[in-house]
Image (cartoon, rainbow, N blue to C red; front, side, top):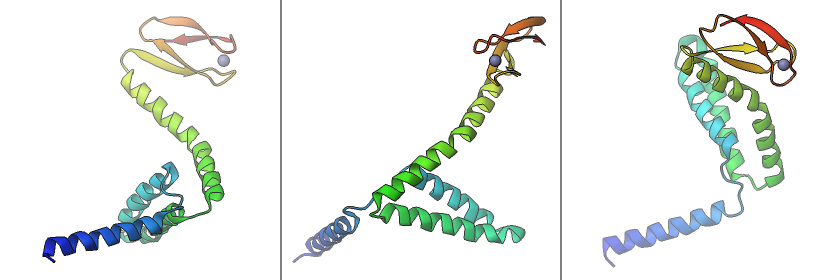
Length: 144
Ligand SMILES: [Zn+2]
């Protein structure tokens, strides 16, 4: 048998072993991706003298992510994913709003309705105008 053939056989065996190992396991999801990225960032910050503990926090996150992907308890993993999706909704919306504010900083101003907390976007440079909240109809006077 040539070296190439031997390598191919060895690789084939390895691939089928991996397939057996991962069969029926939960695999990766968005929560695992989040844990892995945050874990890597946290572990890197652990290089700084007073942030040493972050290294262990990061490693723990990565291990938890690995544990989740290899788990066979689909029900529990799905519950965690749901919890994560609900939990991450607010910070995601805040980041998106911040990006929009930066993008529109020259053309629009953002206000929050005092009544229902809806975010209102109005064009800049219109002077003092009365803004009616499209959701709760409350009127406020703002300088644009
Ligand atoms: Zn409102």
